[in-house]
Length: 385
Image 1 (cartoon, helix red, strand yellow):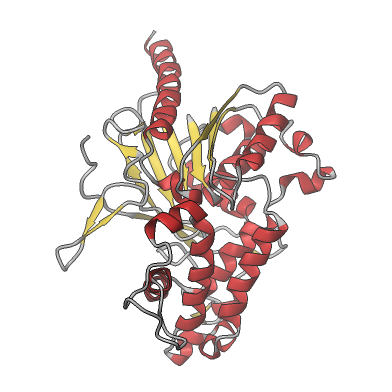
Image 2 (cartoon, rainbow, N blue to C red):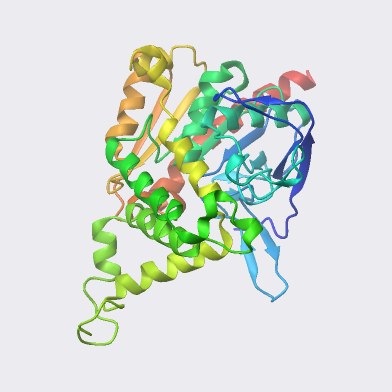
């Protein structure tokens, strides 16, 4: 399959205040985004891809880096010419969310009201806030309705929120490896990760920018905790088992096992490019997502106003967002007589499977978008007639 090739991000500024779910507002903010493919004459082929915790607007294609290396989009195996989400047919948009550290306005940016970085004063944002911001971007791009809104993990929550907040603007909702709300265990993991950051001496109450430091230790541990939850037990056992790094026990508290070395590497690498305040914000957005809460816990009532058709995909070894949670969404949609396609993929890779190349998973998504494309062809032929 072909690559999209070298891509360039774009920036859009919004002067008008955006009301947030917390009661706060944010004004004079920017959103970083990328687009792939061409918008058709009827503007009916646009697909929004929503990103997960540590991803961004850079969904597909590559950036040419100064050292000769290439930064490949996080879902490049999914999005591109001839790929399941085919950019020869669809106009695909990736947006970096507010509060992130990859270009959109976030804690490290200057607050015009103070002349200093927002730091810990950046308002807490929710999945719903992100969707409202994305809707404003869609308005500016002249897209009244998306052929589909798609996302994995936290991105899947955003896709669900789109179907509830803007039901007339979403024809298809594609939710991969996601959940209608976090379990107590998931919230607990997120809080342990946040505490690692908050208690790092270099955190400085969130204003570490002024001190010229980064709470690397806390951020590294947070990533290590999170990364454990992305892998299945089987996958971890196959990759690392109880392999010793130096052939024998060292009888100390350094690195003995290969899995320890791997987690330290992942944590250290993450702390070099991700922002600690952003990590706090995004994990809180994960915790707060619970659309059924306003309906007495009844998910079917929360989804009653949706109009889209749905594709849900889960993975058998994903214990973070287990298949039971996807089935819960499916059952709520069926109660509302929505058209739903559900695939539960038997894959060994845990939560991270949604980023990988399982052929059954890819064929499922490709087939679904094939049907979406047939609809678009019908719309286009109607416009030409």
